[in-house]
Image 1 (cartoon, one colour):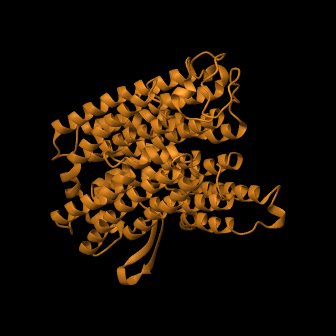
Image 2 (cartoon, helix red, strand yellow):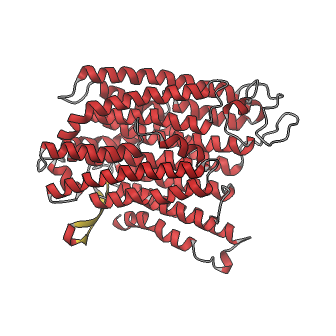
Image 3 (cartoon, one colour):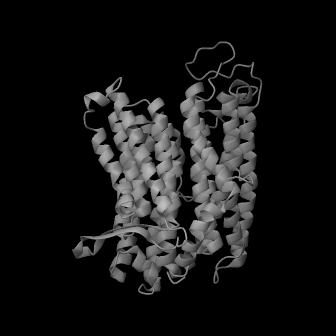
Length: 527
């Protein structure tokens, strides 16, 4: 188990190095480009298999205990240790990360985005995977920061070199926002380490803030929370996200929404809740207020983009939907209750699966039509996917109803539990304030249904015989013939559909892992 976790974290870096080396003659296949893309699929597949083996070997009777731990002294002068371990909170995120990277590598093998060398693309993808997996596995504050920062440069280049229109500006905006947030976060992490005498996250969680004064906790929550809020992203620190998603290639958008956003909310749960409980209790009402505003703001922005005549980009619309969905995650965390935090963790996984699927689907639409502009796609009568490409239309309709929180699918449980957490927040928090936030959240679910059903109506329904408005530069002609789902698309998307249904029908699979760990975390390691 120790070896498996260390392998899962380190193997992508070795795979990235190997991707830059010349392929052996017997493995080149038709071309060196094909060889390196196959290498990416193989490495991410092996990592996924190792993550599944790790999950099978995990002791599900004690999910609150850190397992597969490695603890080696790294920098003795600063008491920084290579400390790895997983519990019921981090294991689902680790598995989802490994799955999404494998699916993205598989998709890219058949549909590589236009850009420079495939070698660089695969290497950056694997470095990105190592950083995200390490974020969910490390148990030292400074290692967490290094892993947290490790993902920025690969994602910057994926957007800037393989993205679409306005990719340079979007990439710079992404890197500037996240780097500035990270600088502030580092100050907060150092403040905790210096004042408590250790950077070990397990020891800090067990201490439950007793070694930190109230002022220190407030400053730490303000600094670390700001850095995490940028990555989440929390309104009003979200403005980098729509541009990044709109410009990013399909797999970049999938990974940005499915994995990178989860790193921010994971930091709130893993660091701030157990290490600075008094500071979190002070800031929780403000965090809940930002979350509630974000839910409504994100939904209203999506509703505006979905309206006819507003030239709304579908990728931008889904990006704004992430602001709303992550608002539910932050609301659950702000409640500081087991119910709310479990809801936040469930919503994290649900959002990764569903929004990852949505970005895959919108990327496929853009490949077929040459645009993601909703007005262009829908034309005068609607895009008529049900008639032109029925399986693609069915997948899009499924992803939309899953995203709006239909009971029986994964999106329902996280939002419901987050609202329940706001209904009865932790002792000492203002219940009238959180009831107000709950009302905002409930209103947000109605707006979510409105804009997603509008998208389904405009994209999936319509006259199959009518020709959509051509994309700029495209030739006019008869009604557009669309290719339906290809085999590689079906292979990349079906696991996300199956897991969305499984998590919706059997939520105990996930909650059985997270709940004991959350109970222990909120009790300061004493439960």
